[in-house]
Length: 173
Image (cartoon, rainbow, N blue to C red):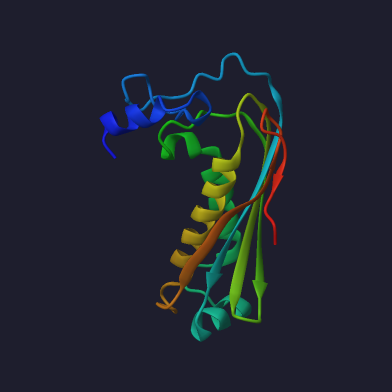
């Protein structure tokens, strides 16, 4: 969609206004200066499907690069902290806590990755949680790719968020 079309769409209704576009249709960072600081929390998940060789290596710890779960967890935490550097127009946030958990699930040879991010800020941490699970998934792929080329990363999604003007939201099962 061109900037001109976005500009037209932006002016259709004030409640339908695209917040990351200026009046002339240019991308911009939203001004959150007037918003109240509130406790914010977001939880995101991703699933990484492994083939038989990758599953075996993960379960036995016989991975060429070391502890795949530990490396993926640290990568996810680092990613949450670097989100504003990776995603255009995201605000840098003072994150107070990041938890990244990786849970191997034998049925389906899946690793479920869950990230919870918290802060006291003027804007939410959904992007930080989503970035954490995305990068943790990529790190897990990198740690296991030597033994399994069939790895699939998928189902990256926001599970819930709380805080801010829009309030609480939870994904329906």
